[in-house]
Amino acid sequence: MRPVLLSFLLLGGALPLAAQEKKDEPTREEQFKEIVAEFRQAQAEAFKAKVRVPTTRYVERLLKLVKENPKDEVSFQMLAFCLGGMQTTLAVVSDQLIENHLENPKVGGLCLALAQRPSEGSKNFLAAVARKHPSAETKALGAYALTLVNYSQHEKNNPSDPKSRAEILKQFKAVIADHGDQPLGKSTVGAAAKRYLFEVENLYVGAKAPEIVNQDLEGKKVKLSDHKGKVVVLDFWATWCGPCIAMIPHEREMVAKLEGQPFVLISVSADAKKETVTDFLEKKPMPWVHWWNGREGGVLSEWNIRFFPTMYVIDAQGIIRYKNIRGEALEQAVEKLVKEAK
Image 1 (cartoon, rainbow, N blue to C red):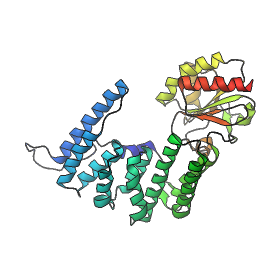
Image 2: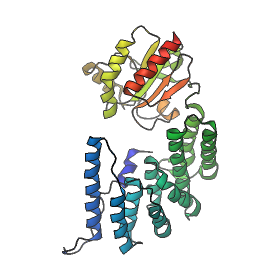
Image 3: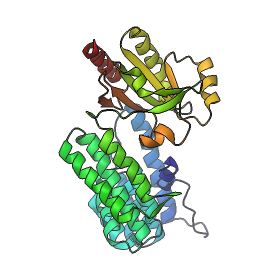
Image 4: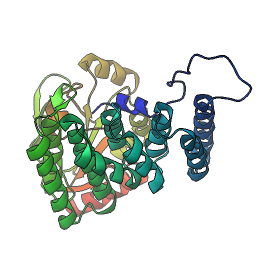
């Protein structure tokens, strides 16, 4: 699943205005654009202030516009933005989509976009698509997206709960059995779901980390087991990833602080060309172990790496102890595990 799908939800400027003479009263399309622009401005300000934007007042304004013509395409776009762009939990939004737009040809794309921005508010809509949509292909996308939302919530709320993990495994297996042959991009729903199945079965906190066979920047074969007995931080990154670059100074300090200890930081690059990484390291030193995977395949596919950076912290016995922690939390976790190893 590619981040480009999110563009479905980023609608400012994407919705063409109907060809018509300018009127004193703005059209519904124009009002929609204005509300989206206001919301994005509020988001930018909230990001700086490190607070969340209350979405209810924006959603209510859009619902008022929807009410004027609940079945047209503009209403579908507004409801889709409420559900995905604003991640509202107001049930009326899902209810309106289910009642008036379930067979819209863009529903499949909306399902995949909602899977990338998982929230409780989208679950009723996705469940309805999975149950009721007349197209087998779109029905498969609804079931797949719903399972991804449930998995995201499991990872956020119950990552160490074996019962919750068992339920997620059951759901992915059902998606594969019921919808596995349906298309998803250049692949199939089944192939995508199998990568998640591997992740749920093998990459949870408390699991023995699977072996990785990769190559270093010199093209030499390397393995995760080469570092047996050490605390390992696996950092999946790329030179084009802003948050990855922002981590480098702290990672450099952490590596220097733990020099001589049973610890190794391994950065696994997803850059398309190995030379991109070597050129980058000449300008910005990262004095630790580097592997290169390329943009697709290899461990990125095997471990279902979906975003960057993705972090795994593995103890000296090879057990995954933490996932996706950064900064001080990462350093504290590593120091704790190094003490255990000693």
